[in-house]
Image 1 (cartoon, one colour):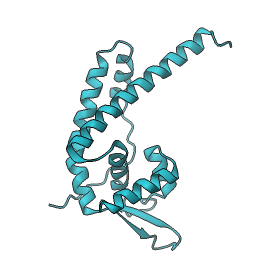
Image 2 (spheres, rainbow, N blue to C red):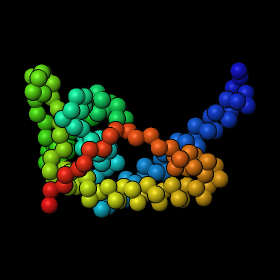
Image 3 (cartoon, rainbow, N blue to C red):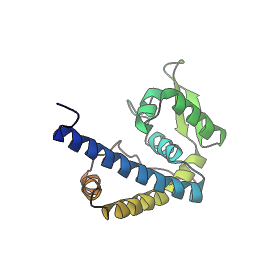
Image 4 (cartoon, one colour):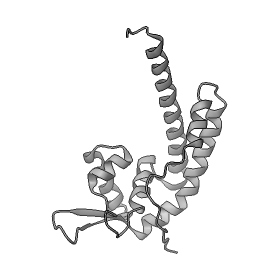
Length: 162
């Protein structure tokens, strides 16, 4: 195939459209979360991922798994965890079966903030998708996102402190 191959051009255009959609959605959610809750998209995602942990087998995530889930490097994830821990939203503790392992849990304050921020995140996502659906180039991707039903992790009941 050559650089002017129609299949490559179409693939490239599809990737550009997907990247554009992602960027617009992320920017829209970022503005809403920052304005309402002082959270970045990455901070929200980290709290969300960690809130889905459970005490069953395989229920606690290692830092590499967390990094993969929030699409950051391990070092960037560690810095993000540290920032949220400094804000009292996360707590680290030693793995009870392997003293070399360190787990991170969302604190009560983190669960409360996550519960408050979830409707903002969901509304901003809906707004961004509705806006993108008006663009003929992005509309098929919006439909694909809306029709996808792939659970990321099982969601345990979330206890939120009052």
